[in-house]
Length: 307
Image 1 (tube, rainbow, N blue to C red):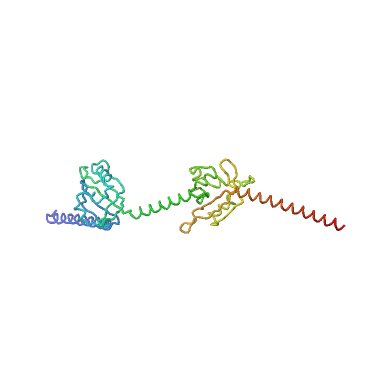
Image 2: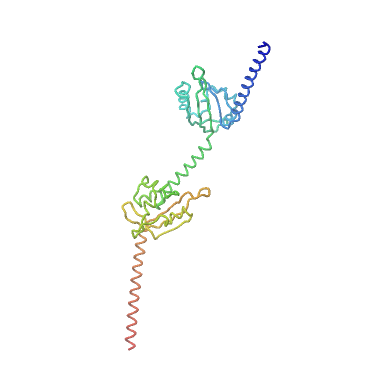
């Protein structure tokens, strides 16, 4: 091969390699800088070597300011430093290659950010720990929203447990999704025995005359299948011991985002009310009988005087 031609070919290959390396570096940097999550690389002492724009915006510090920190712990919430430092030590000592945990950071403006961090250990050619890569997601709003949901759920649970009215929820299959203390006391089942069970099969399976109550005829079933609410006081539900309880129940569909996801059922024991109604009915019948007898007696007397 002609020497000059060989040198030209070799230089062309080197140029292609350089161009390829530059293109790869530019591609990596573009991903690094434009990522929506915070990315940083630490040395084994825990100092940030470099970090991306998303992380700077999360914390309110520039990349240079983060580099000047002696350790990352300086901006970690004091209550989270010990546990985080212990887990980070396991990484840099090579005890594990990756880890993930939540911790709080103090932003530059003094506000608190809750982050979920995923760490990966990077080793050198000899297999020794060299850097730790971190992917950070700001979950402050997610945690706040979850705390608010938990608070609402707690308040709802307190409300359900404090009322004397039986309340339970069912999904689209009729299975119990929640049940309060009053309902459990009424039917004789513990919450863990009712949750996940089909409530029609559990407490509404037969009519008072002993005939089977088909589920598709049940007004509660119609509430979540057809979106029709109901209020019924002419039926019974069945206790665990097999005894019937006269009840008044209402059932209305649960609607989420325009879709029916189940139904909520309220139930009240009306045994005493039924007894009073029966007594009133008996008294009314007696009154009518007396009235009829009195009327007939008066009629006879009137006939006797006429004759």
